[in-house]
Length: 372
Image (cartoon, rainbow, N blue to C red; front, side, top):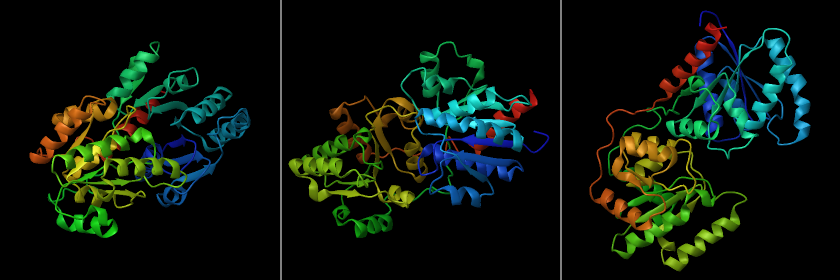
């Protein structure tokens, strides 16, 4: 790119999550490269962090699934024209539709349209907008294959696989076992004390994250004489009281309630990985990527999880013994027991870094602008 560009990213809101994190990461890379980074969303708690990076936020509620959201098409079109947008990058379906309609009505030089498929959304005409980008960024090979299977008219030449990346400095390699990190975890949650192995399943309070599978695994290990403990940061979440009660009741029935910490999300997730002996990724629904796998491996902790979606893709590539046939509880117990007994050597270098993801995304922008 020979001149500064104006890149507009559009998404529903800036509260939390992987989509939001990627938005900030690309905004940061754009600003550091001398470009102008604009983000359009309904706002949220991450707006101050975005603006601290040197990016600009424009508040428009373009993520609401309602016909009333169409009222934002004209102001969004005017924004593109007034700011001289070069690229419009849509990261979610409704914002993508609103942006696409805004672009169709432009009479002057029209910005190029980029989409990122962050998830494995149910195939539908509504979801098909994410395959309409002049370049479509897929966050894994799993997503690319899914897109081509469900939208076969998509030109494969427009697809670019750019895995999500992590910053190795944010997840530094830690000694195993890390007794200081374990002591900090036990101080917060007494149920995690003891000398036995600590299992960790980070994930929000929804049954899709497979908390019941983790509880069943803990029960099997303790039944076999292993003094294991289980930490579930994120399972205790506002508005999820009924689900939490179900999990606690299940733990009580299994007789493992004294060995489980149902906890709120933690901002010190790298320290949580360091405290653990085994990280679980047992989402019941295939995930598009599987950032948890990379974060745990970066810290030096093994992962065991269901061999489907982006999680299976990463495990097969970087820790094959941890890839378990989906929903095979007995196989999960065997894999966990073997991994705890003989921890695999973590990768020497991380396969997918934040810097690589940022550089590859900016290269997609340059590719489109250079071809204008």
